[in-house]
Length: 505
Ligand code: GLU
Image 1: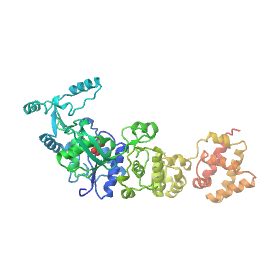
Image 2 (image 1 turned 120 degrees about the vertical axis):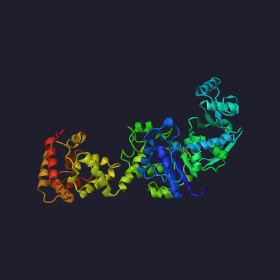
Image 3 (image 1 turned 90 degrees about the horizontal axis):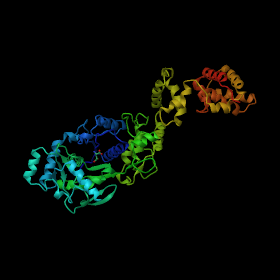
Image 4 (image 1 turned 135 degrees about the vertical axis):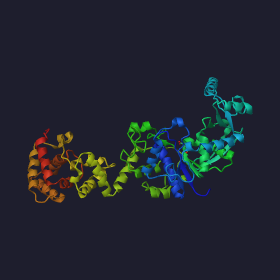
């Protein structure tokens, strides 16, 4: 192994970061941290036609939000810059010249239209056209043209590409840390384009030149790049360089378990697929996920620690992560599990943090939060957090702590509000109003004593009492709620219910 572990995340700025890309970044980050190495962000923007403004900024912001920022990046250059491929053009030119000089690559002048026609003609005969040893000797390229003809065409400004020349009968053999040994007969591969006459390299050339120059020791990336690996390994040979170690991560599968997870799955089932909002697509951040929950969830999407442990802080992941425990088969994306992680992290958050997050929710709802002390809000949060997976759910779970119910759950009214109920609630309100102290315990004592004294059953009083105070048959311990909203408010809600709920039977 080379000296220091160096890994890179190399997205193309063609749009927002998909959750699969985030997982690739995360595994790279964890591997770097585990081995005391460097995590590099390189922007692969050689395909100008697919460039999307704002995408690079988005990627950086997403990694920052997730808490996995790169050690080196366009924004934070180290000594291996520039970190945007569009700024490294000279490097690629010099390297493609080396390949053409040594017979590893050749100029090809065939136009798009000529190639399309060739493809169609082959298809008609039930064959597939491959630009390689089968066809290269009778096409318009520097293998068939004289040096003068080639120079003439280039000088005239004829568009060209430079293709890799696979040597005939090459069997490439290489190892992938996750897939094991792979062997490919290169006679089936096409002579990939490495460089174009606009002066830009294609992904393949730029990627391996940069990985070499940036002293990348391990290439950890998505499975979709596996078919390119033979070419990449051969390019390392052509340059006479030692190849890095490769690890191709499994696909992330749809929640149903078949097929690759797509943006449409998220839209259909209502879960985010991007870390941050992108245009009209919601992000994890905006949907209320905690970055540490997203990290924990993604870490286990294709990797397992070999134990039953599910909750891992980022620190713990850095210690436990091991590429040897990354699975080969696709990893099913389970949106419910994602929510489960958020729920777990919410339960682990310090109460003070939840209170300040809750204050934001309250102010969005127009509740004058200055009316409520931290202590009061902490009591409310303590009562409802257990049922919440997201902070924004605090409102639905506890709006009645701040606002009297405006309506009453109809089903509950039908079931609980009998013709004799209003009188009972009204009498009970009188007793509560007269009480001297009003803690949860006191309220409990008063209500229970009154029920017993009047020879009633708990089921005749407690449910309608809850309905009066909460508006529905939900919520934590009723006496706790009564204490928190206070004696006056409790009585007022009971009286409001008495005059406003119409008994159904
Ligand atoms: N630019 C490639 C991408 O967008 C990077 C692939 C690699 O990591 O080699 O995914």
